[in-house]
Length: 565
View 1 (cartoon, rainbow, N blue to C red):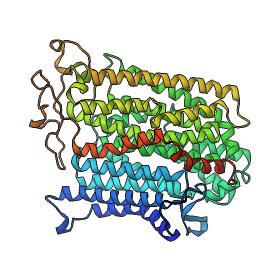
View 2 (cartoon, rainbow, N blue to C red):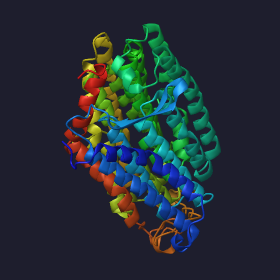
View 3 (cartoon, rainbow, N blue to C red):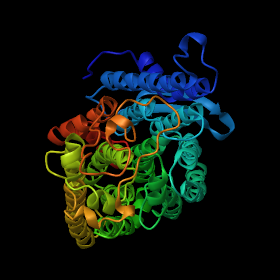
View 4 (cartoon, helix red, strand yellow):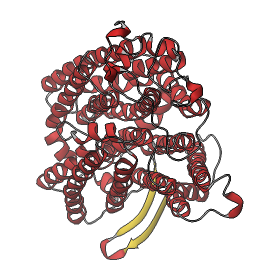
């Protein structure tokens, strides 16, 4: 069944367009704007160009999803297969199935929303041309990662996103941005070198780099020792990107320093590339190797769940001077731990839960970073003690819509039933209760119990954040030190600035808060436009999970069965 009937050739063109168009758009962004498209100034023209290109890619992704045959989601569709390097049997092989299609649409959506948000609220930094070009290159690399079906092309696309994200952090980030950017690039590059060795080992030993052929073979052409070495090498590279504890330490620094749209793309899209690699490559290509390491992967996953939650609790406590962006970053370590636990079960239930949690995390954490960025713009800080101690009635009293939306995103993140975050965690725990044959059931049930305890910790720190940021601390204002007073947010150097933004005379936040200026600017129209799709999809995925599970389940069943339905 398809929503609209599209010919195979048009489907091929749409997928190729989705992958290539952002790259061409990045090149065009660096060129002078034609006279008729310059608008009021060149900066506005290039920002509008970014919105146009990402919007066209999103429309193409939606049309591709509408033309996708939902009756056969396990079949690769919109495929292109062209010889590229015959000597190495490397091919330009593209295609999508029920596993990759949701990630493709999520990437296109989040990048468009980030481009739209940046049109009105460009982070302070160098040329807007470079900013737009880097975002488009980042989008192209991420989309290619989810669309390519050749191991070497997968590696090239996987690496393609590193340099744009490095510069987005290093040039448009906040405090400590240089150190955070270097930490990000060094961790991920070192992991990628090891991953490349594992990919080459699989390709040379099996005689092909084609991911579909390798998945169909299901490891029968590889000895157990080769599979174990390949899983260790490739898994380390993917674990750094996921990120898995204890290879996660680059993530909090990167998120804290990154601009708002950088944090949204990093959490909502880039982290998914690592877990996607586990599902697309390691589970079907090296099942024996995965079975060997699955208990260790699950153990690291549940440690990450508890560690991330405890770190968030430590940041949320009064007097800790915890940064709200850093807290959300540590929450990602815990949430991605659930994804890794689901993959480690090697069961359809667990892997489907992992894929669902991937999408839910992209929607909810993307929304959270948008909201935290808005709070920081209004107060000039993301320090929790300042937000809670200097604000009296806090967000509920000063910006009620913003406060309500932050509370919504927080309860979605903690896995409230009826919202998207619930289903991924629940299915993951169900998968751990009954893992694949050959895995220790007592061990995985122990991991399940630890993971369930992690959900309680998640609820604890998220509710503390809502209480402190949205309701505030009721300390007398006379006791506040100057450091605790909200500061004027820096005005972005470039890009259109709508009236009423933080720091403008009409916003009432040009200086420290006083009783005579209690209100903050509430949600602006451009913020509502960027955030509403994420809110709506969070609710839809929570109330109607069959839409996503109907896509992923047949593809996962076939993947785990070695290409056999």
